[in-house]
Length: 213
Image (cartoon, rainbow, N blue to C red; front, side):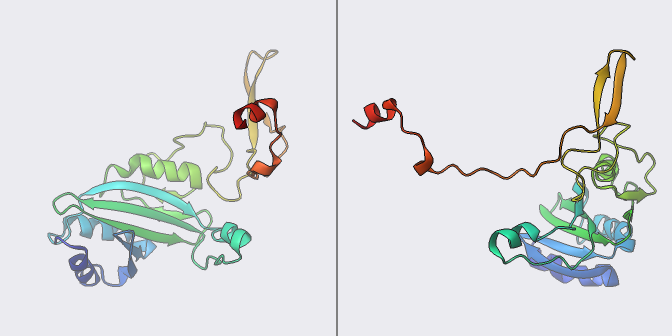
């Protein structure tokens, strides 16, 4: 298997009903996969002699709950997201053929749950822990699923769209107790809007006159 067109011909027979749809984006093939079949799909793509996707190069969680809202507010052309709120996206690489493929599974439950692929690609270990930490996706079958980037006492999942910008708690050093403690966040939540500075609002200075003279 050398070309993208050949890969698109192979996949329907190889994956069967597990392949929900496929399309080409940014020069790579994106496949929507049934969530319950992701482990078997990864195994087939790795072991089949016509695909040989032998390396997982990335895995990430997604939250589509506000997808399209920003574009709609800016241009009026936003499209409401009709799919699952949560998703996991997998990027696989075939080293022998130098071809990449992108897999995506939609997750409808809350908390979202997906089967771990660590038995197929051991490198998925920390990727899955990161997706659990930041999005809250539970990977069943993972041998050590715990937070990776946030602290042990962290509340919530910071990459979810409904996570407050100010966070849930803050920590500080308490002199009376002689240790770092957690407490409810004390800063007010703000909406950060980029400020546009136009040239006609600049204050003219004597230096500007010298430069223009």
